Image (cartoon, rainbow, N blue to C red):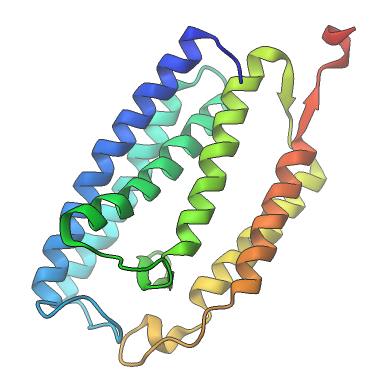
Length: 219
């Protein structure tokens, strides 16, 4: 990893923001669960009131905008900004579950189900799935921003885009395929862990294909 004080300092502040923002996110979820699940959060999901749903959709949109803004401020070039966004998103999402565990003791296991996102339709899955994806994003983002000064270029080409797109489709499918449970009223079907593994492997392949050493400088 690059030892540049500037990169390390920016990574530190991005991580601090993500940790604090995760607590805000966890607080909102705690309040929502107290409102809709006073006996404790569990599936089947309860239908959220329309006005609360609208607020939640805008809140989730605002969350992504804030994380993008942090990446934009921290980085100096397009892909460096993308790297900081990945770090911010990944560390925020992992910290969110850590805060929930320390504040309300949930989840009690990584296999517990959660509602992950609402846009464009509800995503559901076991906690381990978003945590593994977020871990990958955090590591990949850190490598992008720390290796750029060492002349290891992050230059996604067609293969990287194809692998990343395929991985995204597969991962989204793993979260959104059980529409009945996602929309409330029924227990979820067993999670398709093979889709999670396949999606992560495609992401990894796309990331590796995008990382190239600048031969002209290394000679």
